[in-house]
Image (cartoon, rainbow, N blue to C red):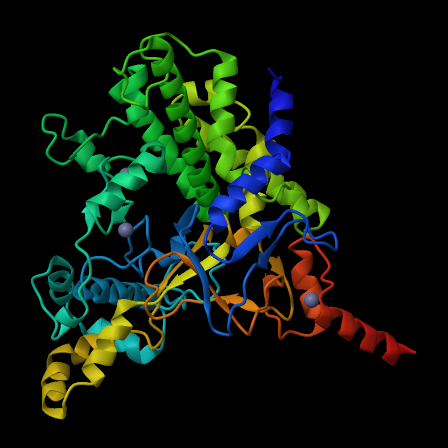
Length: 510
Ligand SMILES: [Zn+2]
Ligand SMILES: [Zn+2]
Ligand SMILES: [Zn+2]
């Protein structure tokens, strides 16, 4: 049984090669790909083709291990918090977007979202051109409310049906889903620990539970007999954590998602151990100590190791050390991470930090953030409004005129560039690919890829035995710029293209 420090070191260390190979073999089964732990050239692991792929071929699709929508993007794109597909209706999406255009106009800012430090880059789609703003301002409040409430219909929206939004089982308004099964899956996976609960107004309605469907007291709370008051305190603390993330670095949200997944899995592991020992099937699978008192330290550690497994082989490096940040900036980043962790711990049921202290230590929190900063994939899901507009454009002239008669004032108020859903996600297999400035594969969303999965396509023919590479940066940028960008990923590229250009540079200097 390791000390706390020993546990932290163990979590930071690479898992044994045998375990990693097993895990990667499962991840790549049937794909014609394999993960080699040593890709050569000091690059660590890499992904190799075990069969030939033609240019343009789909290599694989992979659901994210952890994911989040950028805070700035939330008002613009209403999506399922679990699979990132758009939800509601075209009317509701139009109403949301026009609201952000109006708000952008009012605040005089180009960016529709006032407070965000997200790196989504192409955000601000709600601001837009002054023509759109004028058109948006010309709409009456009731018209937008009518759209949002479903009372006002736009023409031909039945051509782009979207799933009816499903509420979070905990009653919060933060997360909506495309289906009850997505809502339930998110709850079981992580959201039971990250749900802020119903809004304040709903909450004060003590008498009736009407506004709070389902199982508001989190599973974890039921287990420890947590009082409603205590739960409420945690939910407020959780809001503080989320606000801090939104104001500083929304990757903290992504990291919290991962931590919650590990904690839930570890709790389940404890529960099944307990059940095993009691020899009874009475537990509900999420309880760790309901009958046998507090589980021992060793049991907790073993359970944590099991829960940590999906993230165990990720990149290991402290966030503030693995980027090219100068020392003062690194100190600030460390402080930010420390503040964020403190807020998160305060928002968890107290038995979790007590049972799994190593997971909630600064080195582990810092390495999870580092893992995500270095290995996350920007997720983009195109707006369904694009499809709707295309549908209108393709109508016969007469029908089209009628459609635009009704829809025109709203269409005019939409920004030229319709913002899609933008977020960050971390993928188990995607994160194993090495970079090349002349990659043979790319992450690319096809029209049919309307969710948050990673889709990897071959850029050219790939032979069996060849390493499959992606570009982490704009590979068309000049050598020096690429070097700088890759320094943020903590390495110097030695791909063929870089070597050739370095050689040319050296020859020129002579
Ligand atoms: Zn969904
Ligand atoms: Zn919730
Ligand atoms: Zn390169």
